Length: 255
Image 1 (cartoon, one colour):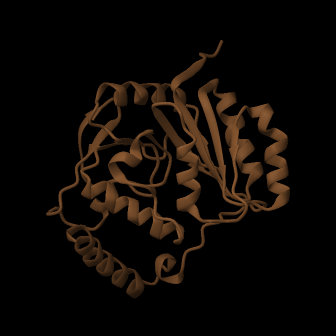
Image 2 (image 1 turned 60 degrees about the horizontal axis):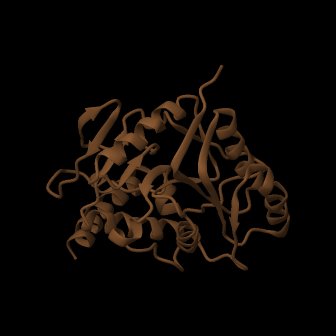
């Protein structure tokens, strides 16, 4: 018999845009893992009518609160209005194209204990495209993210990320709200800098693809569009990109 996991202090916050089937898969994945939360908030960013209709169809089945907007207002607005609706002390933030893995329940139970125990902690991260370069003080697979401006490389700046993470619901009091009216990567960059400047503290799960996997199907591909500068594997463009980020990140932090 599987263990039942109920997270009394946690609201699952999911941001959604035109991927209702992916959202349903995410919600069903938590059910399959016997994970339930005090509340579930789905914040929709002005999806097409067919996706909104489907969300309303499954709202009662999966017991979530749907927060909508009449038109697309971007990632910043979508996270802000979703976070405003959360009533519990902790928020598990996940975008709709992620899926928890089999080890999630037990590890997440540990996360909740850690963030409640360590009052200085703001965020515990579960996923990244690369391992954070400066980690210290391991504890049960979780490491402190050690940001120091003098440490080499620009990847040290990525302490905050919009990838799945657990955070305190009063997050905005310390770090401010997400920038609205900008592209998603600009919004995320702004919060990354605010997190650093306001001395945010974060843990990083070392097996950084272990608790969630990202799934984009042909029927519902990623809605995040990046330009050639960010995506190109051309060696010259890649080197220029690294050099640009190194100087930009340092200058923006020092402003």
